[in-house]
Length: 427
Image 1 (tube, helix red, strand yellow):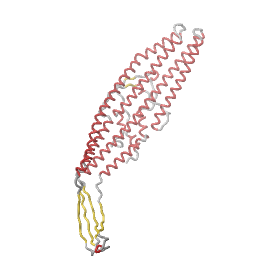
Image 2: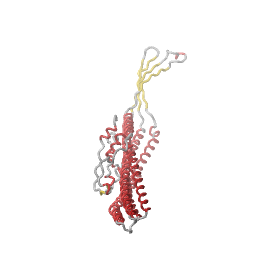
Image 3: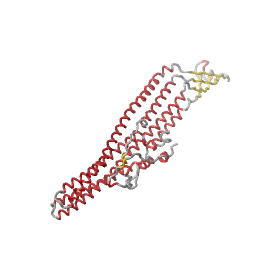
Image 4: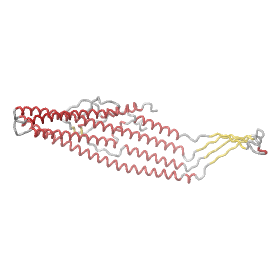
């Protein structure tokens, strides 16, 4: 039934819809990024290889089998009884022996079979929702790994800019030292700054490679690929609702399953009727006789009262859990939306105010430093450089936090539910 669930799921994966009302915030060094793997492509790769699909398919097979079992009525019985085959006097062997062959059937009453089928189908629905939730958890982890990889790539650009500025400053310091405008130790400090910048660049590249390897591990690949970095520098504020949360959908399915268990328990109040028919052969001669019989249990309602009470309590608990989860998820969604709004505001202010000011300050200091005057020293230019690097690093970190919060928000609101196959996972 699920011969190749991975392939069928991959066939249904769709690209994410392009965001609307976005505020592009692109670093000057990232004006145009090379084409690379997008988030939807990363999710597609995971969907074709992740073992979760096989787990989900097996669980649905088990739930399907439970539905088939629930539809089976009680099995008929055949039997044979031998009476008076041993004894004393006239009841000696083969003297008064009576042999009865019989056939027995049980008729379920009170809608037991229908209730069993309803309960099994409800459990099948629960299994499907759990499968969908399990897959959404995997996709959320992939999305977080994708964000971390993009943040690491952005760190390379910052490290490259830092090295470029340090090398330019070293050249300027060298000229000033040659003209005896600065002492010799200024050249050594500039040289140290270049070495530190090269180390930082090497570390940034190593971190990016490890982050790509971590992301590729989700589809059993390697780090030899590029990423589409434009989405990382795009801020899209959203205000989704928790009403359609997949967690609430699962709890609703569990409530329906609990309600079906109540109905199933209630059918136990009605006893099942059993009828038997047989032929009896008497030991003396070849006389035979027809026999019939039947039975029905007594006191079924009293004996089943505990099962009904337990099922009813579980149904009430499932209903209460929905109310609690709706409140918790709603609060978490509101918190994430507010957090993303605050982050987007700070990112915009850094782009609008901090970065232009820091760039202007560095340019002015470097121009004055290059003219050979004594108004500016290596300390001032180093501080201006560090202020610009700190602003760029802060912006990348804020973008990372923004997108990680978005990954959590997407998981809570089921944004990627359309990437989950409706036939293999939710059926």
